[in-house]
Image (cartoon, rainbow, N blue to C red; front, side, top):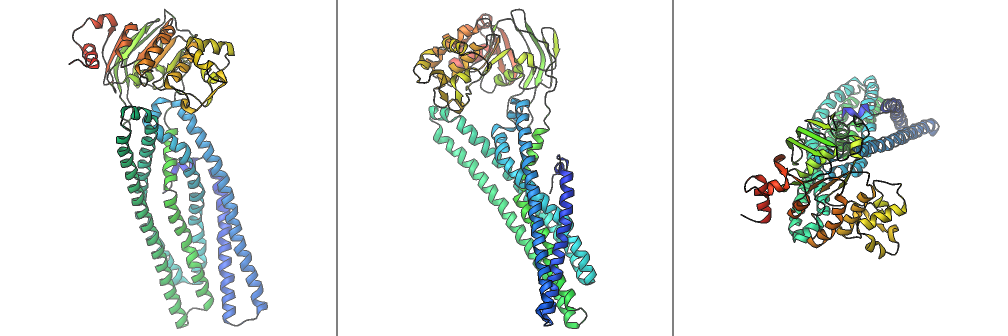
Length: 576
C-alpha cells in the first residue's frame, strides 16, 4: 500500500520521529478524553453533584483540545514537508528531462511528463500529507487504546483483537483491487494527456488535411476509456468504504452486546463498560481513515512511482571526453555497427547496425518513408539519445556516444516545427548566443530574409511572440530559426529534421534560397521527404525501418535503375 521508496526520501526519518512522538501524545489525549467522559457519565448516572462533575468535564475539554491541537501541529509539519519535498521532486524531474533529453521524452511521452510535473506533483503533495499521518495513526493509536481496554475488560480486548485482522485482510483484498483499477485509470489518464497534447500540436496539420473532425472520434474514444476506468475505480472505492463501515459497525455492535450482557448479569461495572464502548470507535477510526484516504491517495502514489522511475533513468555523466575542437574541412566522424533501441513502451523506430562516415563540409541527405528512423538517427548524431552499442570515432577520438559538450557546441538544430519562446524576436534569435549585440542580430535577420518582415512591425526586433511562435506564420518562425543559425557562424554543423515539412511549397522555395547561403562552410545533415532538395546534396543515406538500406553520392545513386534509393524516389514521385 505504501511505496517503500517513500522511506528513503531526504528528511523522512526525523519527520517520522516527530510524528511518532506527537501521535503517542495524541493517543493519550484520546484515552484521557474517553476516561473523563466515561467518569462524567457514571457520576451523572449516580446523580452526583455538579461540583464533582465540573473538574471532570473541564479535563475532558482539555483532552479534547489537546487532541485536536496535536492534529493541527502534525498537519502543519506534514504540509511543510510535503510542499518542500514535492518542489524538490519537481525540480529533479525537470532537471532529469533536460539531462536525458529526447530519449526519455520518446519513451515516456511528452504528455506524461507534463502531467507528472504539473498535476502529478499536486497529487504527490496530497499523498504525502495524507498517507504519512494516517499510517502513523494506524500504527500507534489502536494499540495504546487496546492496552487500556484489556486492563479494563479482558473479553472486550479479545473481541477487538480478533476482529481487527479480519478487517485488515478484507481491506487488503479490496485494496489490491483498487490499486489495479487506479493504476489502470492513471495509465489511461497518461494516454489521454499524450493524445490531447499531440492533438494540439497537430491541429494545424489536421485542419490543413481536412481530418480534424475525423480525429475527434479518436479523442472521444480515449476520453470515453478514461471515463470508464474512473467509474470502475470509484465503484471499487465506494464498495470498500461501505464494507469497512459495515464491518466496523458490526464489530462495535457485537462488542456492545457482550458489554450489555455483562452489565445485565452484574459481572461488569458500569465504568469499564462505558469507557470500552467509547474507545471502540476510536480503536477502529485510524483504520477507517487510512482505508478511506488510501483511495484518495492512489493517484498520488502512482504519480510518485512514475516520478521516481523517471529519476532512476541513467543519465550521461561522461560528457567531457572530447577535447575542444572546431569542425572544419578536415574533420571526420566514423560510426560503425551503431545500435539504439527504445524501451518496449514506445513505438519509435530503433536503429540497427548503422555504418556511416561524415567528413568536412559535405551535404548529406537522409531520406526514407515516414517512420523509417530519420529523426532517431538525427537524435543519435546530436547526442540526444545514447546508443547501446557501436564504435564512434571523432577526429581519431574513441567515444561511447555523442552526448559530448564540445560536439554539441558545434551544431545548430532546426526541427520540423520551430519552437519559439514567449519573448522578443531578438531574444529568440539569440538562443545559441545570448550575448550577441543588436547589430549582430540585425545582420542575422537580414541574412535570413527577415528584414522586410521586421520592418513592418511597430516594435521591430523587440516585438514579443507567443509561446511556440503564436502570432506569426510558420514561414516566419522558420526564418527566425535560420537567423539563429546565421548568428552562430562558429558552429559548422547544421542538423535539419524536415524543416519545411509543414510549409506550403511556395514558402519552402522562398526559404530555400536563404538556406542555401547558410549551407556554405557547414556539414549539413538534412532529413527530408521532398526530392528537390537532393539537387543541393552531395551524399544520401536511405533509411528503411531503422537500417541504412543504401548510401552513396547523389549523382551515383541517381544513375541507378534499381535498389532502395530508386524504389523510394519512384514511390515519392508517384511512379509505379
